[in-house]
Length: 221
Image (cartoon, rainbow, N blue to C red):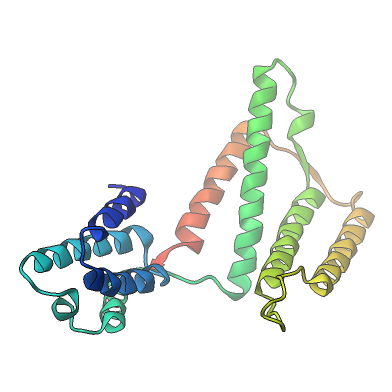
């Protein structure tokens, strides 16, 4: 059963609960889903719990009594029993952003290269990637992500004020980006240009995806 199917089944089972049982159970659901637990295993555990609540309900036992009376405490025990996704912070966070951007770059290069071959065109000019482009994409992806995150997380002094864009942050990061571009273009004659066949681009893309999955998104207890 996929995660989506488990969520749909969970919703169906919740409709069969009494209001009191549903409220108690949903407090647990919110706590578990807001945590860093592995999503599929978390949904599987919640589905099992929904079935336990319905079985107890048929016997006249409330969810509160079944699960100890404290939804948050029980939810915490569920989270502690499941593997969690390790949070990505600091240098690893920025490396992951650049890594992801370059993975997408090689995917695009592979698609364009194979597309050109199927259309009967020589893919050589399309398969040339400069070191400058790689640097700008890596740095630019970090800049864009930082601007977005700072804009979204900026606290509003007035609660009624609509969320806005952090213009100061945008200005700072644009200046950094311009400096990087100026340095890069001034050194462009010294920076090499690589010819990357679509097959190699595809391999690099696959390596990038595997790296994201097993390096940056690995599970921890």
